[in-house]
Image 1 (tube, rainbow, N blue to C red):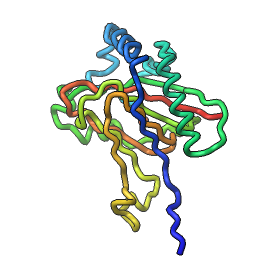
Image 2 (cartoon, helix red, strand yellow):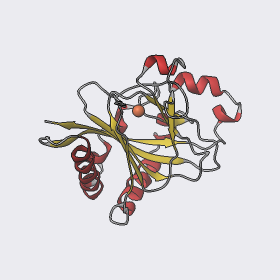
Image 3 (cartoon, rainbow, N blue to C red):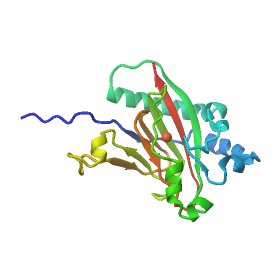
Image 4 (cartoon, helix red, strand yellow):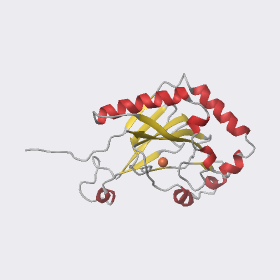
Length: 212
Ligand SMILES: [Fe+2]
């Protein structure tokens, strides 16, 4: 008898040591808050990757704010991830990065329980165009109500609960945000983020990686 579990999706999760770059990220965020356009850019709701509210001025965040130590740490983990899943790789580059400030439940949208609207604003999406690996690093996250990231199975029929849907073959996987947590995944993997129902803002940095 032979049993093959084929077509798995590798997800990399690591709690990284943030002591070297934590203050650098804090300082970059203070600069954002000082910007008088900040609230207007956030539209009083949040900045979330690939949402229609995303503003171009928040792209290239790591480069713009010279977060070199953060970038180095992330790229080291990307290298470990690539080595774990395949053996051959070339130059690893952070192609783009942006900040996500997911405002707390006190924002008007969540207070009104317009959950459906939030799902419409931030639906499942991929980062596949021109990228290989995408990831998120949680800088500030309070608890499991802060907005989990949800990955959708690439097996379309399993999503529709066809066999072998069940505890070992889920239609989606949830990852809880937690300070210092780095999550890496193939850029083509569909995902979305839940609203932030905690009492404080949740702040994360997202990025896309290419391998040549
Ligand atoms: Fe995303």
